[in-house]
Length: 248
Image 1 (tube, rainbow, N blue to C red):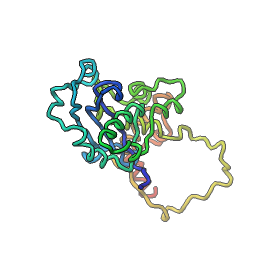
Image 2 (cartoon, rainbow, N blue to C red):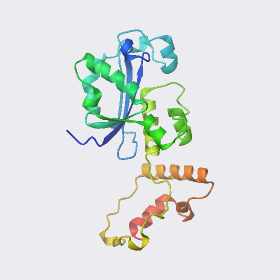
Image 3 (tube, rainbow, N blue to C red):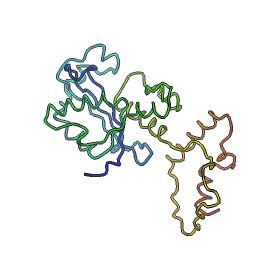
Image 4 (cartoon, helix red, strand yellow):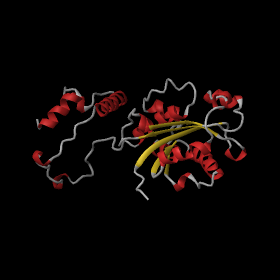
């Protein structure tokens, strides 16, 4: 089996809260990350609406806005199972409150004799991850969007694809890594020498990566109430990248 290094954020919408009492999936949303960047290319996104073969209760419609009438002509889960599994197979799924979504996916797969989602993918639960990395903080998707200053103003209703897109941004922020530049624990006198420039391979940042870099600098500047050292250089990211590539 493949190493499952491909990351896919996933969310579902359902007719209710209990897969064991007859509730069914009505929407699946997936976003495949390209490295650590979420790109808008169609092949990186999957949105599937599913006919649940039952009524959608009004209280559920109030949450996601998906009605029985809208789903009437949509395929049943059995008809989209292969498309879904082909998209996620051998990946690592990033899911917020994973037990809920995997419970529904496993119920649907079991109906078809197709095993469990864990047979096809690894699973990361971002609720557990956020509780570990941000102890004491609220870890709902909305709360994490506020903490990381991710715009979720268009989330007036829940939607699987929209929530998967927001989760991709949250996961990137959660796993960004080093937050300080201290070398206090490093043996500074015995650091390896810098390689010669001519021995280096220069990989230029893409416009998307530069934009994400600027967004992170905005957050750093706001939280620290000081100008990041990168911006004190006095050059925009594009100019700095050009100078780096030229060996200046």
